[in-house]
Length: 140
Length: 190
Image 1 (cartoon, rainbow over the protein chains, first blue to last red):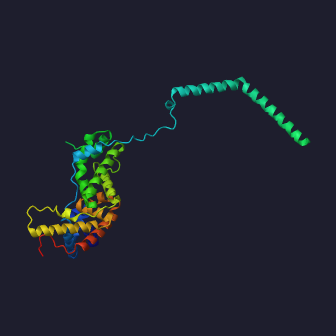
Image 2: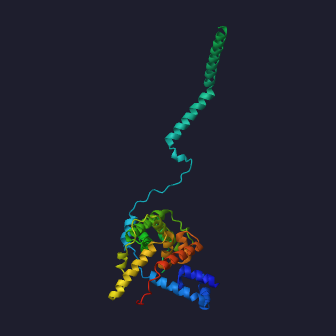
Image 3: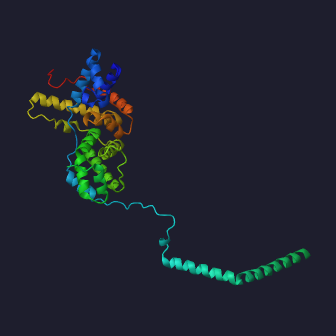
């Protein structure tokens, strides 16, 4: 602890040593005791402390019971609950049943081969029309 | 009998326990009202700020973890103090403090006429000098000088380092000393 640090403590916290940081207080008081040069600063700080203490606190007079009752009557917004990205139960059984039925129908159609034959026949027919129109264009 | 910690009261309040919340309010109201009054210098603003701060506490309670500060029951007080300080600093000042109102409350049970007049004037001048400080310097003086908080608590409420807090205090006291230099110590008649 140096006289300079004690001067800093006086400048920041004033002359009421109970406001000084507890960890530094004892050492600072010892330095203050043996350093007469710090006394003037200490006494000036005491004068300022006394002046500040003459301002009564403009705190509102609030009734704790009434305030607590008023505040705790306020509704709380529903807490944001983090939901999983996928949850089976959120689908609902009707939806799940519909999905399964659609999947089964698609499988049966694919397995029966009807879809493949039909689409193949249609593709062949379209290809023949395109070739015919190209040939027709070329003869013009 | 052990006192229920602030953290436990907050958790109980989080489940809707209004009595627990009432205990919290009773425990912290005076200090928060005083702090808001000192920073704003205005009773009306301080009252609104204190109500808002406790409302935020009520809304915060369901998610309160008590981890903001690991110093036990000081955690809630520090958190609430920070809310009050921030609300005070954020608030647009609507009016300067009312020195006459402050002067009317000088506590002196048997003042003679001279002392009453001088006390009122001094109180008014101190209120004006404190109000003229920059916001954060005023908050630092309110926390350390008037509320008597430790430097660590005050720094946490202002969300600054202890070194920065000391810098604010030094500048504030320097300005106050300049503004109030001619005020005679109490008890010494000119």
